[in-house]
Image (cartoon, rainbow, N blue to C red; front, side, top):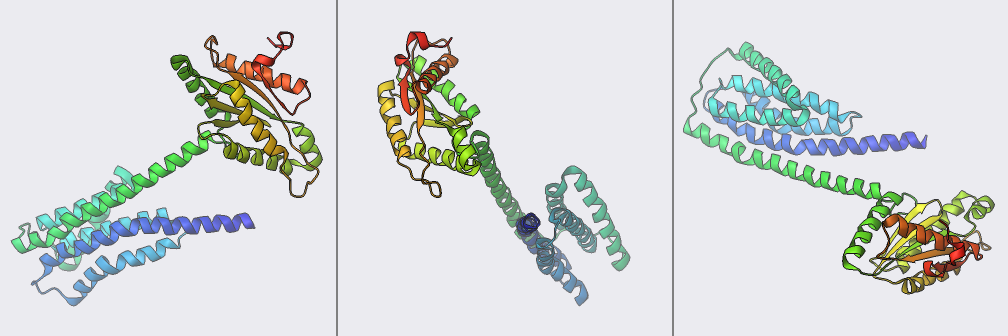
Length: 361
């Protein structure tokens, strides 16, 4: 039931958003289009109902379309129908002003832009069909005529559309470009972030590690790599449940963001294992940073689980110019972590402290 309510709420928000996005170009385009048509109709003794229809279409119809679209469960499909209606009425007014060249070209241009935005080239073709139907309707009502000459007053009446409508379309496109950029940024963040801990995921963190490895080889600068394991994490999950286990992982990630340096790169390597890259730090200095993190986590009190105590096993390997590749760097940090576990856990072991006999191939 809650899922249905949420889905309905999401649809309502999307309908309002989509309707607002379409409202601006339609309202502005038709508002300035009024002057193109009115400039030709003025002084020719047209019936009041024709003027009423023109005012309704140019100023009231955009608001009516917005109201209907904003509550529709399928606003895109509905707006496509509204755009075809715009084409129908556009053709009607083009024929009514007897194909006066400049106003007709301006309206055809506006309709073509709107149809392209609504559905691409194929939709433009459908728009031409509806424009033809609108012209036919006007011809049946008022007779068919052809008066292409544009007078100077009629030319002046077209200036608002010539200036304002392109600016409106440009503004809409600019807003869409900004939104697209924001969405791409959000997707990029999602693609490189672990959903539970909000740290870098394994794939992106290894990319960062590879870049740091190449930088260290070129500049001969120091750097340390740490692999961190939450001690007895499986037991914690079994005794207290996966919700507590997830809480431990999230809290550890928060402590990393709080106690590591701004340049340090922390990631979730997999399961209960984390990884940290500490640029410009020798292993001894990295040990001090990580020991502070481990101490703070050990003092943490867990709501609802007062007996829970969390400790970390950490293996640290410094950069060595003789390493053939980044895999060797990871292997040495993993050996140090393996040694920390073998010595009883809850400790930090440097790669240089791993006995030769304990080194794994």
